[in-house]
Length: 310
Image 1 (cartoon, rainbow, N blue to C red):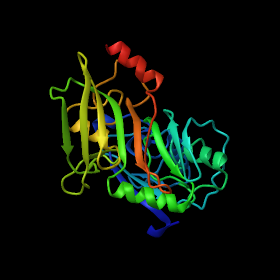
Image 2 (image 1 turned 90 degrees about the horizontal axis):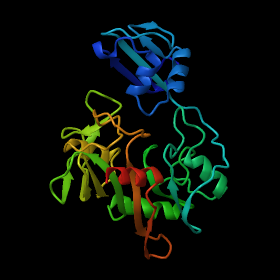
Image 3 (image 1 turned 180 degrees about the vertical axis):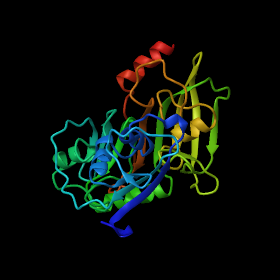
Image 4 (image 1 turned 30 degrees about the vertical axis):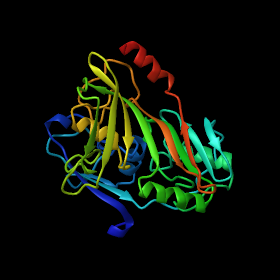
């Protein structure tokens, strides 16, 4: 495995004084958020990670100024297994299935997450009845929400339904409302954030408002309640960029409570990631042509948090 074609990506990382003393496996998995620590350890064992042109072990402690090269191999053809994982089904028919996704569940298999995903659960529940447009790793998946974001997501059972919903996403005609708790009170009742989003120019684990290389991104927000140090908002996505709400709200000094990627403010509450819930999803049904709208209630932790803040 020496040719560039053998690798999905070759990533260069440079460390500074703040990184000094960190284990290399943790540092890389923190920087490359889509790859788990166990997957990074596997790459190190397979001699696909170099520090200053030398091989290291997973317990290597970083020095300031280290030059790290991480080679991500092209994934092998995988057989994704169906798994009997309970699903909170909001709606289901012969074309679509809507799930209220819990916190901590990854939507589709990816390096380091080949089991326990929503796809594994859907494959068990739907058997062979999922669209194949997105390939073996993402059968039925039209859109995704982050691992620690809860709420409603739709999957398709056939290619015709998948094409229909993909077109609606492309045309921005799907209704998507998210509920979030943000740091700091918001003075205005509502607003629109129109700022392109792309990969962060320095930190690869982040997306960012990027006017040079970003794609159009528009988020509408409405303040539902202001507390002493926080605001409870409802956001409507006009576009669907990676981490859009998290990036946009952070860009106007209202990062999401619990978001350890886009907020530097430590949460005083014990949380698992950002307080973000996909509450409402609406679309034109691919078979009937009728508009349908579905909702998923706020998770218990979110409701409890709102009570504390009140």
